[in-house]
Image (cartoon, rainbow, N blue to C red; front, side, top):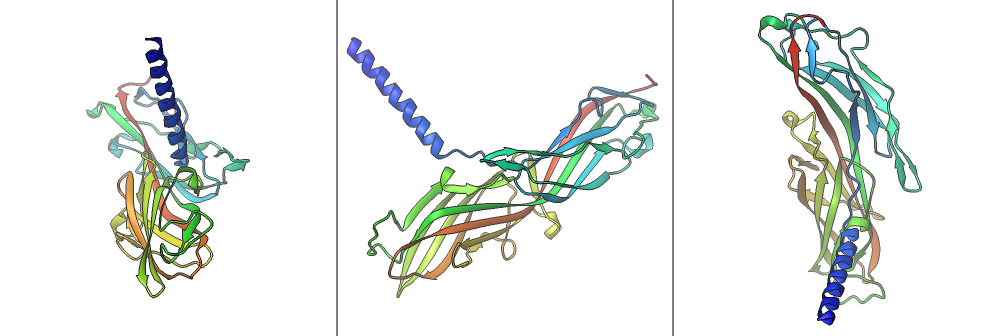
Amino acid sequence: MRGVYFNFIFVMFLIVISGCISTNDDLTTNIGGVDLQILEGTPPRAEIYEGQAFNVNLKLINNMPRAVDDISICVYDTPSESIGGIPGKDCKNINLLAAQDYDGKITPEVSELILFPEAGSYVYSGIHNGIKVTNIFTELIYSTQSKSIIYPVCFKRGPEVQTDFQCDLKESFSGRSIESDIAPIIVQRVEKTIVPLGQGSNQIVLDIFLSRDVNGEVVSDFYDGRSLVDVRVTVGNSGSYFECAPVVQEGLIEFKETSKKITCINQMNLEDNAYQDSIIIDLLYKYKVVQPIKNIQLKEGII
């Protein structure tokens, strides 16, 4: 009986260890971008009285190892302007320096305190007109990019080509085999297939699986504001481009979901000898984050 018990414990130990190993291979910790931090009490979270002055004060935190220029930051509320509050959308533009990367450890860049309004305060008046609740929103829009590099990727014209290194017509890349920095959209996995077409011609097919930060959304200034991402996929040394699908317009994919698969194809004339190169995936887009403070009670009279 003791032997059966020992064997059970040993098997469970192996399962735990193997689970840990496979998890490490698929670790993805690179999703991130610019975060909003609204200071406590600005605005009040529970209630605002008629005639009570309030502000919206916040900081921005850049988690990406590259500067972000021309960030649009706005605040607005839900009640009609007839009772005061925030007039329309109150916006300003700022720039953020890059986060610092020290030996692979990212230290975020934090902005100075951002004040809304720039001077003075917001005030609600005429609350007795039946409006009892306000929702205050902070909106952040910025342009950024995601860059992922996969190396080594093997290129050979067919299965008959022999190599002294690992080289398969089909390869899968994920986790640590994809080098990428922090961004709102990341490359989760890439499946490569080389299809021999004859006479030295080959079709390189990449199935690229993308994931994005669930706290925001992709926006654009084109095609009625559709969620468009500019996709550029190249072979490292040659710079040869892949054509990707599905696209809205040349090079532009729509990315509304939290994950998406795209397929990119490149027809190449591969040499007699196999070789290793890199695949570079660049994604350019605008990202929008809205942080709400909901159901703030509006109270009649002054404190």
